[in-house]
Length: 448
Image 1 (cartoon, rainbow, N blue to C red):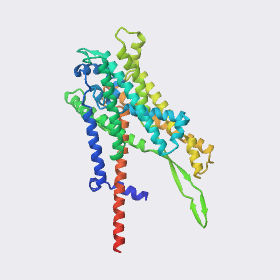
Image 2 (cartoon, rainbow, N blue to C red):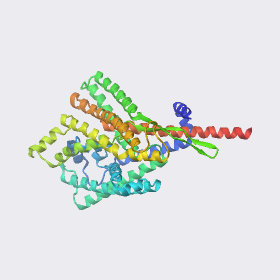
Image 3 (spheres, rainbow, N blue to C red):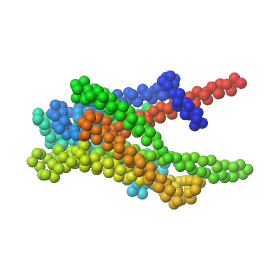
Image 4 (cartoon, helix red, strand yellow):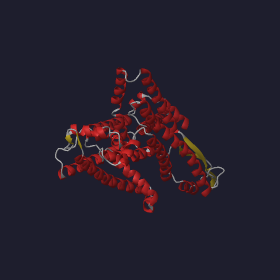
């Protein structure tokens, strides 16, 4: 069966997609939903001066605001109804995962199956609303307190502006959360991930055009541009290889006799990904590192304390201290988040309950220790891989003045989401082809 599935996946083409009616409907729905999202990133919130906002954001785009604006597809710099994007939902989901690891009540809910999962999702939605309201109020207050060369970014500051901003931005996040769930249910791929993906790649054509313009004006040589294109292909290939890499542990199930028949005795595999934490470590690391720089930029002036000036100078992109802390925090969060999402003791207990065992390893504590040993080695390699991918753009940007639009985090997100979406399209096509084979078999049976 596995070889047949691989052969069908290898023969997938656009003709097969054209024949799969259900898949076409899902693809069109996904495309329409992403178009709606992109239209919303151009609808501004009321009471903001666009020209003053553009000047202010240009001064602070190097901090954490620039990172969030990249994920939002430029919606934050334009201060539109989707300025917060889906980030409050992601933050709430991560917080719920952390709480599930430390709260016995939430951990019990997680073990209750579908009912518990729905309850946890409901708590995540409530957390999203609270975080979005808090962040949107902070944005409203921050906009009132900042001003650029052409004046304040807010036309008429006051309570009414704060209330309308909170309602508008929170409503935009809730709509995107609902839209992402609709894409997951009625479209193709994970809706939340696709919304972030669309925001990141939205400005890619403009970035490529600006890079080519540098080559036309002579600011960059043609050889350097070609080298960057080749290197981008190599890095993407490397990311695909590492994201697909996994260690498969052989799991054996004993034979059982029921009456005169023998059951069981089969073997399966327990797949352990090389990078179980995904893109969470780079997101956490970059957000925490850029937060002090952003706060200093908004709160201090040229005559501020010396330590604030030191923070701004040393914790900015390309500085040695920034890159050293960046690598250290990526490695730390890779181990920390993996320890939360994967529990070797629970996995060993589940194997023991179902009669499964790893050959040569005794069930129970020995299996948990072995899983922890294997996982530690995998996460070590995965953390180094994440650090290399995220550090390469930083080095090229700071040392060689290469205009990189894609950072390591965004590149990882784009490649991972593309792989997941293509895998789901393959699954739909395989199901469609198997349905066709079953119908043909039934017709032949009736004729016979």
